[in-house]
Image 1 (cartoon, helix red, strand yellow):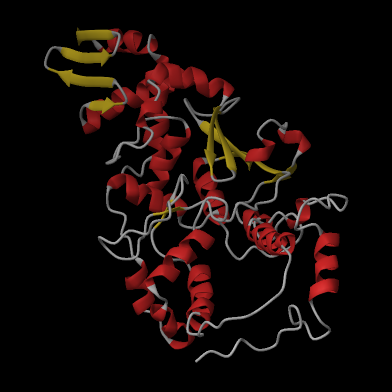
Image 2: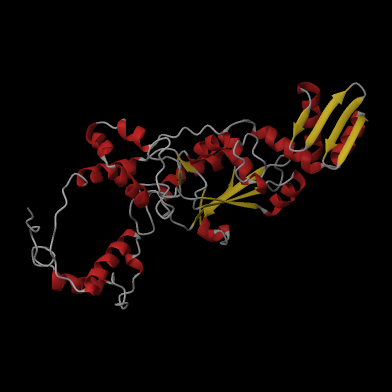
Length: 379
């Protein structure tokens, strides 16, 4: 018996034992006068079992699609919704709509799965495709790699099999520095997971980007529980108890520093408090950020302390170019482009030799800018 015949048997058995099937454009019911079968291009009633089998054989994509998702199970779960998103199937419980405009009807989706349907999740590139060989009808497998490796053959990448190996890949950046924020856009490339099951795909993605699938799903269902800044800050204890002292405008600066696309792939959904939005754009990430993360809280503790310092008037003598250079240095460090500045590019104010020259000229042996140790006395 072929896999297609097995699939038809399973579908008929489901209708006989569990009742009508209505899934992804396929409707099959059993009435007193026989089976009723409906798809977007087919409408048959009063079918005998043999006639139903023959009719189902004419819509193999719908039958295989039902079989696969029946095996996946977990209706209403984040896992199932994510797997359907991966192949551009309509997600069954989307509240906000999201990218439902990308959804493909079953025949087109089934055809596209033969070549692979590609999706991007942060810096992850997911390819959903039909399994080869003797796999059950409609079975999907998933390939996962860095988005920068989307065009690289899997065999040319460092292959991994176990989802837990993703945690090690995500530990350090390209320069070997620890990545405290897993959703920072600094994931290394050059690796691949091939032929993952749906369960293993979700487990692997969650090791790269913890909780992103669950929060994305909650958002689509309209029940993402957002904790705004004030709520999060006020529940901090111990050494972090000071973060709720951070001035209102400093929270704006903090969000601009930490919670933008260039620093984090999550889309910030939390604000200062309900009804008081931060002026900084929350970003365009595929998955939401529901509360200030531990890295933001740790940084906020430092800024809360610094913001308690009084301002003073200082007097320095700088040329206009030197003032511009200091601003260029701050900008280069803030944007993380110091390593991109060529040594010979002395026109860039953040050039290393320009910086060393400025230090030699304007910073004394004790590290004081222009030799100034104390602020100007004011009344």
